[in-house]
Image (cartoon, rainbow, N blue to C red):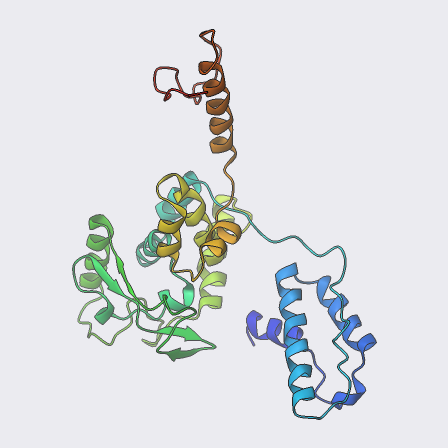
Amino acid sequence: MTKMDQIEIDLTGKFGEYPLDALDKFVLQTHLTALATRYCQDRVKQARSYMKSIFDEAMEQEYLVKDPTRKLKMPKNLRPKDKRVLSWEQLWSILEIAARRDRVLLALDMTEALRPSELFALRWRSFDDANTLAITETIYRRNLRPYGKTPGSMTKVHLPDGLANEVWAWKLESGDVSPDDFMFPNADGGFMDASNYRFRVLKPLAEALGIERLNFQILRRTMATQAQSMGSVKDIQAHLRHSRPDTTANEYMQALPASVQQMVGSVYLMLMKGGEEKQSFPDFPQNATNFSEAPSLSC
């Protein structure tokens, strides 16, 4: 049983031996509170949503006359969301010490912000031997499926020249491969399991570099955060293939302290330049905008 299997069992609850009408609000609230001690708030909210959906369907099918989840409350003091991101230096260090296969795989994932369900489903027919990678399949519960998490997930993504060359070199190193072969197969030639990859590859890399935690969600969030100075929210939304821009902005793009400090310094300098008396401020930090570079401010 994988860690994800255990989480899914925990979220839905081990209530199989009990009839539906024996599960009252107290039992369900106690279960939800217990989950809050082990999982983050997103998981607990997911569990509450599952339970409400189950009992909503039971009401619809007339198995119950009263919904025990109607007044089910979220536990207090929920664990905060994990919003950590990595620095460019940490990303470079990961690629520097990674084995050849993992360097190509992680460089592809870091650049294209692929979900693991998309990354491990890639076959050589997905690669046009140039600058395009087509996402046509995903993996869910160890099964391949011809659709993705969102309607925009199944699309073609652009590979920069350097990354395309690395993928091409990996294809040559992989030997006599067919279009249906996976780009990053397991020992048996099938697709790799994301949970096993986290345990066997990402965890040792994090430990070797002193990184507290490393997984695909953190890499995807890091890409969205570090790219905010390189493109608009719409650009990053399109790259992550989210259905809504607020998901990109609120859940993935995190504030960068250095960027915030630079913005505050620039705002203050603009205010001073807009005044009647023009003064120079030689002691401002280097990341502040110079007067000569700042546009004029009309009052």
